[in-house]
Image 1 (cartoon, helix red, strand yellow):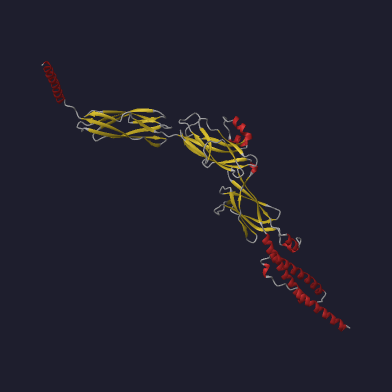
Image 2 (spheres, helix red, strand yellow):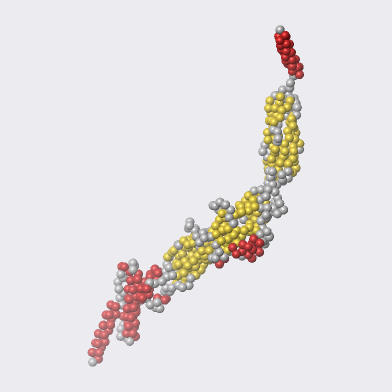
Length: 499
């Protein structure tokens, strides 16, 4: 009886060992698993479940000393192989399903003029319905792989040339969880309306979508910038301040352009770049929320009470929404402080101009030609005029007179000449006694200083015609001959008429 019982146990052990060896084996991999990872996952999951069931059953037999340790270790190794294959299939599919989406990219500007961009990223990875059916989402192994987390997400902003235009150049997110969007903030190193968002994540996947930067509508104003915000402008001349307008508002789209603190003697008007005519209002559209305009100003010819040379004038350009236009119009002639402009809560830019003047030296001569006899002096008179917008100092005159001619100027130097002021100068030229008959030219050069800068007038050329000295004896003889000839003609004419 004991022998029979032992024989049954041996048969049972052999029977248990045979199916354990065959069922624990992992099926041969299918060549199409790489092309169809979902089918590969299904195959790996089935092998994993069989290996797990077989290992649990073998472990119970081993604990009851019904099988050897070798058989148990073989079943355990088969399970570990199946588990690794299952994990690999899960990872392949999880990585394939990973996706980082850009929820929005919002551009804003700080009070110091720096542009910022906030980019919101979301983990939109998701398994298909079939994937959800294959894998129990609460499975411990599946959850340990963190299917709802994308690790090591790198983000940066680039321009059309591929250069990174964000500061910092790149931001790393250690993880991006599904259902929990994350926002990163950059400072723009180059002001653009469109940018490429460079994203690298997971096992090296990357995306480079080009997005249009939304404007931060919470500011509810038009931001104004001017590259040439401070200019030196000569009196009597024109100047242009280029203005870049960018809408950051979700409600208003029409704004009136206003200038405050600019003296009334300074003419001003707005114009749009690339268009003709003057403008006073700007309207933005959904497709165009940036505009380029100019503020054109003209200074008076002379300094005034409010326009003083070399004294800076600060003024403000504002983009005023329609509901605040009346308030600004009522205070148009007042002097605004920057605190008052800020309190108005509108977009503005502070500009500066420095009135400058420059003297303009002009020589006006009523006569540039004269005649003279040998050895007789010749006088020319001309007027020196300051036609500029700044005083002229130390006006000097130089002449290139003909050889051996005497020259004199009165006065030789004019110490100063105010705006629109004029003075008369006399030029005297005396030819030598033995000068030949003919034309002689003298060139006059004029130099001066204005604000320590040299100012020259156009050169003037004076011409003197020297005539030969007439002979009194020869002239008298010719005169008597003419009188005699005329008298003879009269005498013979009378005598012939009597016949």
